[in-house]
Length: 287
Image 1 (cartoon, rainbow, N blue to C red):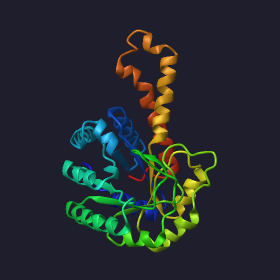
Image 2: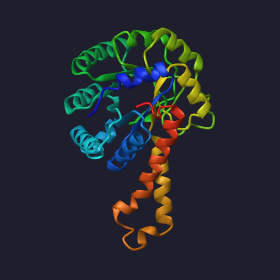
Image 3: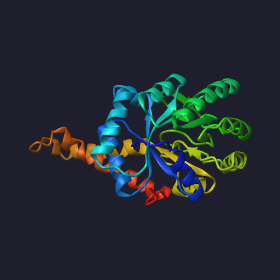
């Protein structure tokens, strides 16, 4: 059964580890992540961007697939199904479809409008027992067509949004989505520290987990980050394994063209990446 992310993240913040949010794009992705979480006895958050939701035919299809898998794969670890970078309309649609958690990204609205919309969604989520993530300061890189440079959030604005009753807060600390450029300045731990001091026990979220060096990840966790989002890294490992399979000509041997065989190496590669991340984040054995 899907659960809100609240309990797993409260435990993670208190225990100084982080729960990974791994974005799903299709059946293979979802299955690989769930099986790895179960094997490592780790809580997990499945992230769905609006683009991926559309690709998978809509949010109801996603909910149906995930619920079916939890049952048929015998998954017993806590699993949250979370809308990633949701618009106001997207958030409402996911609440309706049966997600257990949403992110409302109102970071591009003027702060007053961000506050008003967040307040309304917080009330609905509380009533339904769902968790809700908010964002302050834009995360850099490209996320569904929005390109940002990786600004740092204003700690006072963070406190203002945290005080509305959201479950978790994504604060921009110089992190970006996708691959990091050569001239990336690194994470701003000063900002993170200031945000944590203002928001207390609230779990903080680090977006753009791909390519941040392990020591920076560990330091971010020590400063209150309890949820780390990973997407690009799984895509790259899937791509690399699939390319090797095809370049080795295995798709032309026997029934190697069967999609179940063709997609198997990529699926295994996702499992490996997820495992690596769960070990780094410290969530193994914490279910």
